[in-house]
Length: 344
Image (cartoon, rainbow, N blue to C red; front, side):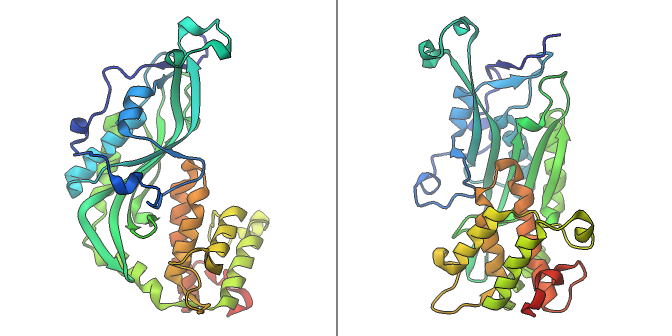
């Protein structure tokens, strides 16, 4: 069997507004240059219409069709609508374009291939949508209940026979001022492997049905982060320990919590603290920040991460801020006190 990646048009499988059950007008806030993106990195915004009409869908080596980005979103949105109600327009970002050509253009030089003869799909996808009418005020900021997901074709075995494909789904509270997602363990599916859109719908429905937006525990946990302050000296200690953590041998990390943050996000968080971030950094000459600020500085910093790492890194930021608060308050049971060092 020829192990070649095949691509086919999405004819007959186009997602429409009616398919999603959503009213999807152009959202001026989402498309304006001043709208804070929920992720940046090397991604670009794309509309559902462009995904459906300008992109092809990869197939497996046996010509079985993979699950398209738009059908992934449709399945998750269908489950969200049944559990929570109406959604806002989807904000969708893609990266790593894979450009090919139709069979009739195989013998042409690259410079001779016309736009009509080119094919395109995006290897990686991240998207979110807010639940209409579900917003709260936390620490003076409006937060919206948000659902979304990511996927990367690079994790799927497209060069073999049809097999399960990998996706990540989440449900979290999103801060309006910066579009940060505050993902907690209870609202993340982790990596799920699905064969069909029905599988995705079932896993999404299970996740959303178990996430009770009226339950105050999760919101109180986030809101209480504002009550614990971090001095500049303690912030510097935490940053230093985060840098050291990356180079510890595996045995030394065994009793420490897992923190998936690299140099680039840490540097971005420090820049935000020093004044680049007017919402969560030093303000009005006050050098101390709260654990709420720390969480959002880190969440803002990981927007430069790759799409397929975004959900777990976002969750890691939320878990880290909550863990640091417990360590400062003497309630640490997971090893976060190590990050405080001499700052205590």
